[in-house]
Image (cartoon, rainbow, N blue to C red; front, side, top):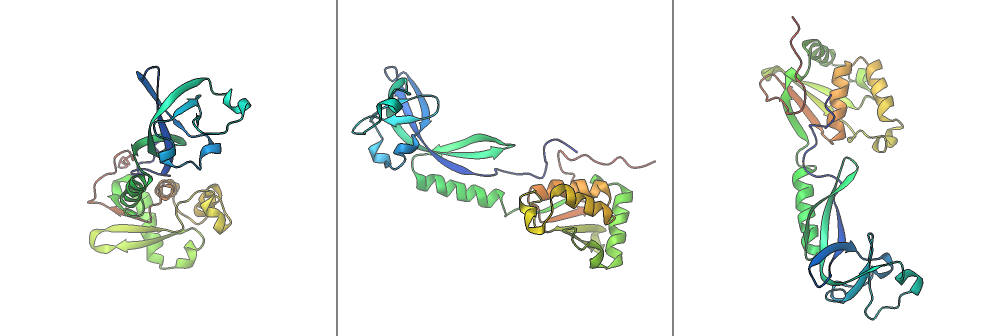
Length: 240
């Protein structure tokens, strides 16, 4: 399987952080720093165009503020707050990435809501080519569906349905995303779920593909011989 999950679309784990745009050295350079937690209560209008000190981590407003000398001495650089920005970040493989910034919290929240809608629960149904699975694996899935025995899949967090008109098959993934944290409600982990699915007779290649989709919070996955291949997901070479 590819290192990057091809089912993941858009941004994940969106967050907003208020940062100060600080100019220094005669306004020739600028930097961005979050406000020190001790001054987080200050409103935006109490920050703009005021002198500050800063280091690599935080900034402190010095105008009309009572600051402990010990804390003040920890900040070696001085500047002026040019503006207050609300930066929107996403989590990409455990690292924070800046998407963009706005001049008000309301504007940033509006953008985050739109991004969350368009790239979150809106697209939870995927139709991909059956060629991503071997003929043997597809036959096994069709055989499982033909048994019409839901008890055989009990506890495996997946259900299968025939699409006879299109010679396809649909998988419904239950309680996604399949992560150790979310699966706590079922008293299991991702590795334990994999083993239970193997014990239940699901082909390993099907299990690995379903876990990729479930990690991206996919709810329905359709394998159709006429559907397009999913970029980044390997195709299975036909057996000779």
